[in-house]
Amino acid sequence: MKTGQYTYAEILSQPEVWANSLETFQTQIEQIRSLAKSEPFDSIVFTGCGSTYYLAIAAAAVFQELSGIPARGLPASEIWLYPRNTVSCGHTLLVAVSRSGETTETLRACEAFRKNRCGKIVTLSCYPGMPLVELGDMNFLYPAAQENSMAQTRAFSTLYLMSVAFSIVWAGKEELLPELSKLPAACKNILDAQLAFPEKYGRSQDLDRFYFLGSGARYGLACELSLKMKEMSLTHSEPFHFMEFRHGPKSMVNEKALVFGLVSKENEAAEKAVLDDMRALGGNVLCIAENSADINFNSGAMSLLRNALYLPVGQILGYERSISKGLNPDLPANLTTVVKLSADGSSSI
Image 1: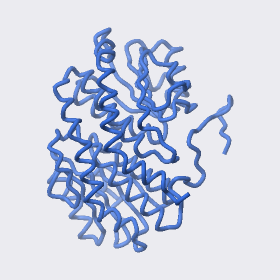
Image 2: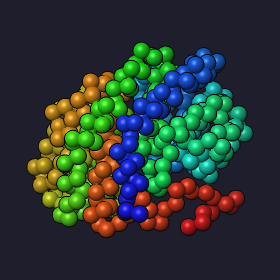
Image 3: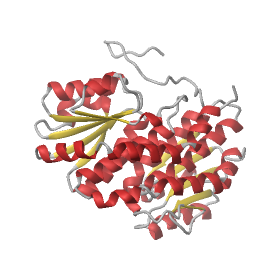
Image 4: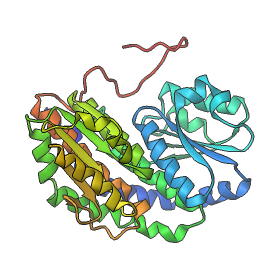
């Protein structure tokens, strides 16, 4: 088996998987409408573990902006272990996300939420017949995003995209759904013709640290891309909000650093100014945006709804870094596909 073949194929398959999953989502719209109208919810909590915790952060930001309902992303372990500190009971919607549908902390978070009668549960996952799909009031599956590799790539981006679609319908703004249909073609264009920069920087032996900057709804995605760099390539990597990077972390920037900027349309000038500052300090910069950047989406999609397009670029960067170090991104060190805990909370590492 060729090293990294699953990861690479799964990254490249994202345009087709997104299109397939958006078709699946069309069959779920009426269920979401029904639940949204069933009762008023005071707050929404998205939850997951590892990658899907970062997905929860990103999804909550999109949901709140679209719906106006307070939303936040929390690690499933916090809901399980500290339910009174994390969730208001009575009229909360819990959206639990898990690629496998069998991550112990996510299952226990749902069980604690149900036991405390905090509200209703929606689950998003990729595999039928798993324990998670028995715990939600509604359970949505996207089997096209299933993966062979340990580090999530297409599963993460697809589940994130479906959380955005879910948020659109919940907010009663279904006229925005066609915006998402623009993303598969834009993603294919990036993967077909705009990988020179991530390949170059991923293969560079002159770099030893990577910083992923994203603000607003993009911060959770910056966290995920930083995690991909750590998991795949065992490289020093950290995520930050754009403006926060000036408050101390920039001291780490030199010619051995790459600063990866997930630049927004609404705050483009301020965010690019941060990247310009890092160039002036001698750092390498990779700017990703809709246009006028090193890598351009040219999607024509609404700014808030096109954020999934940042992900394939950062995934390729981590993949190339892994291969250049002689590692196997399909089998990251010290990891398992699913984290399962015993009754006392210990793992099997």
